[in-house]
Image (cartoon, rainbow, N blue to C red; front, side, top):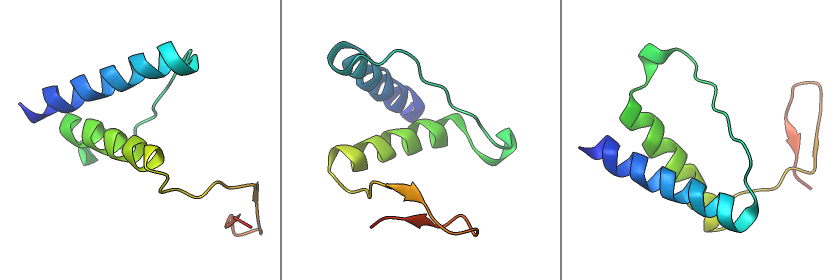
Amino acid sequence: MESQKEQAALVKRFQRMKDEDGLVDLKFFFGQVSESTVDDFYEEVNRLYKLVEDGKYTKIKRWGDAKGLPETG
């Protein structure tokens, strides 16, 4: 089952983060449960962490204008 593979990968990632980086707690807040599956959740979280590990992100220094758009400079 694909969700078991993705779940195992996420558990392994969190254990490494706990052991190496001191991860203490992590929470996820779902929107409408009917809009996503368990497989979707695990796959998306793993995809996001992989992008961060690969350096494919922009660090936001502070929030910008009243529209909520971040300033990245």
